[in-house]
Image 1 (tube, rainbow, N blue to C red):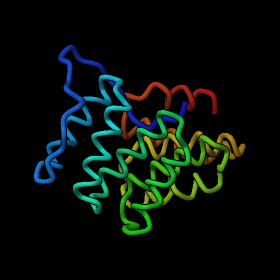
Image 2: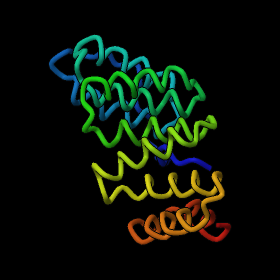
Image 3: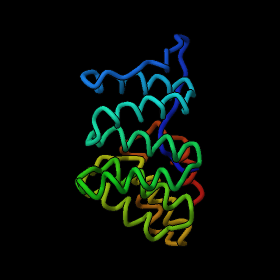
Amino acid sequence: MWCLTSVSTHSAETNCTTTVDPNQADSAMDTVKSCVREGKLDQAIVLLNQVISAKPDYETAYVNRGTIYAQKGEIEAAVSDFDRVLNSSSDRADAWYGRGTVNVRIGRTDAGISDLSQAIKLEPDMALAYCNRGMAFMVEKSYDKAIEDLTTSVQKDSTRPSCYFALANA
């Protein structure tokens, strides 16, 4: 039920085995996104590893790789990537969101709520952070807080059925 990313499919097949030129690391991220949309998570990780080798301080690559690791259930690797980003740059809402979502998913609800709260503080319009924090509040049986966050989530982004479902069950 936790929302990390939305994966959609399209008909064109992407070459997910491209070698990354250090000068083209930014454009390689477009290929990574296409690989993820096509469900080629392992190939996306290979490309992200190449991007990281070419640009070791490229935080977006770590956040994206952490998100993919989380999708694959490789929790320790996901948390490691999010931690790496947060240790060097605590103003990355996407890293707080990713780590918070993973923490909630593995039962570290308090840590997850704290991380998601930080993501919301940095990016107040991040609807999925409200949704996931609302679901975490449900786990904690803090239903008033859950309803507040889930309502905010669907007001900010009305395209997430899981958030509506959670709100209906709060």
